[in-house]
Image 1 (cartoon, rainbow, N blue to C red):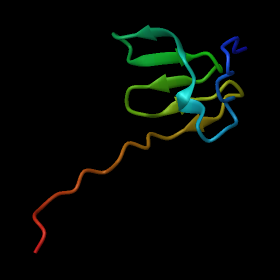
Image 2 (cartoon, one colour):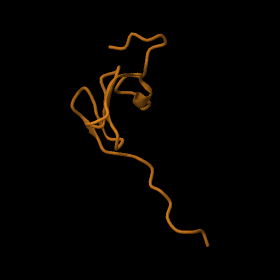
Image 3 (tube, rainbow, N blue to C red):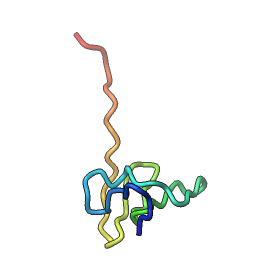
Image 4 (cartoon, helix red, strand yellow):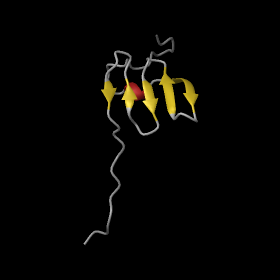
Length: 66
């Protein structure tokens, strides 16, 4: 699917989110990457094979260190 040089990571690779965006919907909160991954603003993903990747944004630290 990707025609970039060098090619973007495939949807099966761990760095799949590094692929270049093709289109974006600000209102619905998603970006379609050139490897077919649908990346959501909450960091969840829908892969081309239908696999769902749960949101994985970092957890913010709360409270002060003692």
